[in-house]
Image 1 (cartoon, rainbow, N blue to C red):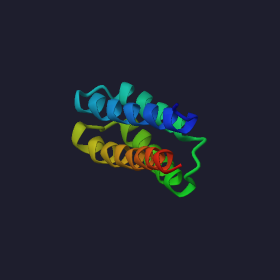
Image 2: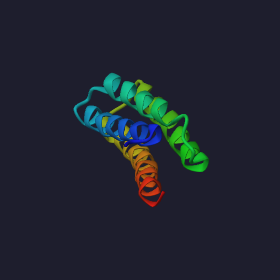
Image 3: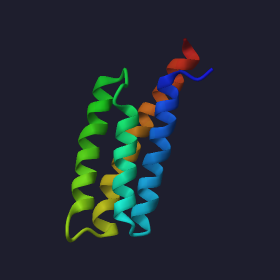
Image 4: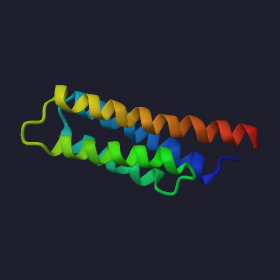
Length: 100
């Protein structure tokens, strides 16, 4: 059975992937929505330091997406870093569940 943390990180991982995909296609509004959804999914995480990284990168991502001069080239590095941070939490929660 999936724990609430596993489900949250599954949701966050999918949302972070969708944010990058949306930004690649130039849909920055959708990317912004997906960044916010990913962060909302990890708020109750047991991994404080990693969640702080996700939060910082999420705030950065929302900022670059909102910039008037935002381009795919300017937003993708931040979104990819955000996605990687979410994925680290996602991997950790699954590893913890397997070892429990």
